Structure formats: structure tokens, C-alpha cells
Image (cartoon, rainbow, N blue to C red; front, side):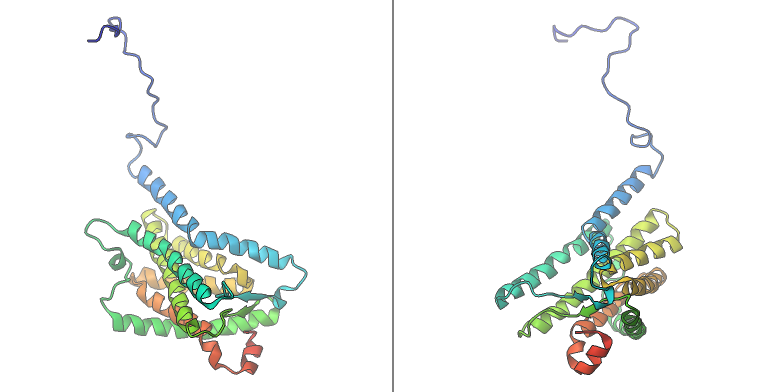
Length: 284
């Protein structure tokens, strides 16, 4: 024993400066308490880096629109805007935007993975039945797209939706491929994070199925608020349908196919319509 250490008097407990951990944080915490807290924190972090952040900005943009001097129905939302007047820089910015927007998708899949368990297979993002998934996805797109267009027209008529400019890109040779990639990016981000990841994590947090479907659908509606209340409500309905399908089948790939098809038609298909039809729909 070193010379400068004096043993405590007999019968006295050794001094300690260790503070007991707060209830629920230490080894004696109830089983599952710490994993649930960690999962809750994880969900907030993933959403804060992706769609949750978009929802906050969308709500702020809606407030800005509603308090502007111009009525909501006379305002415009530009999807896929140009990033530079120089074509090669615009293309570079577009591709970088797409690539970095997919990082939260990679993060969600990484977090869902477990030893011996593939995250894409867990949420049905694999290619075990490609023909069926594509067919189902296109069917869902048709079932959602036609009523969705009607809802948009009604929202425009009632002044509850802004006019949507589906592409701000100049007609360069790369514009259509970039718009298709942007559609795929939107589909992967929204369906993997807002459906596959969120449903799986909320199930682990012991949420009820109605609560899970409501959370996923309301999140989808929230990050579309910048388009106006009408489109936000439509996206909530779409979110309920997509969430129900995922809970029933545990396959997110058909939803990715459906979402990609809807956005490709919206981003690119408008070029095939006459100007009179576009003006009637409020699409420019």
C-alpha cells in the first residue's frame, strides 16, 4: 500500500464520490426503458435530418404565404428549381442535391439493419418479386393519381392550393433524366423514412396501429404544407393508404414504384399536355 494512503477507521465505510444514476438510467432501470428512450431519440434525430426538418420549413412557408398580401390561390410553388444560370453548374447542383437527400435513407437503412438481418429485406425494399411489386405500384399510382389531380383542381378553385410549377429547369438535354432521378429520390426518401423506417420504429416503441398510421400520414401532410392546406390534406389521405398497405404487406418497394410514377408524370408528363389543359389545371 502506498505511504500516502491512510486506511479508513475500522467500521467506517470507504469514502466515495460516485453519485447514484437517476432512476431509469442506470443498471437497475426497468427492462426496456433505456432502449425505448434511445429509439425515441433516434427517431427524432432521423426525422430532424430529413422529413421532420422539411415539415417545419413547410409550416413556416405556409404561414408566410397565408400572411402575404397576395392570396394563396394566386401564389406559385416551384418544384425542382434551377440552381444556376450556367448549365454545367446547374446540373452539378441538381445531382448533388439528389445525392445528399438520399443520405437519410442510407442512415435509416443502416439503423434498421441488425446482425444477420438485411434492412432492405426487413422493409420489403428487395427484389424478391419485382414484377408483382411494379404492377402493384403502378396500380396504386393510378388509384392515387387520378383522385389527387381532382383534389388539386378543387383546391385551386377554392383558393386552398397554390399553382404548382412542376419544373424550373431550362430545357437542357439533361433536364428530363434529372427530373426522373428527382422523382426516384423523393420516392425513396419519403417511403423509406416516413413509412418503412417510421412504422418499424414506432412498432418497437409499442405504438398502436392507428397511432402509427396517423403519425406517418400527418408527417407526410406536414412536409407538403408549402403547397397549401388542400394538398396537405390530400397527402394525409395518401399517407394513410400507403401506411395501411405497408402494415398489411411489409413491402415498401411498391410504394416507391407508385411514388416515382406519380412524380415522373407530374415532373415530365406535363410537357405532353396542351397549354390550354395546363392553364385549366393551374400547372405552369
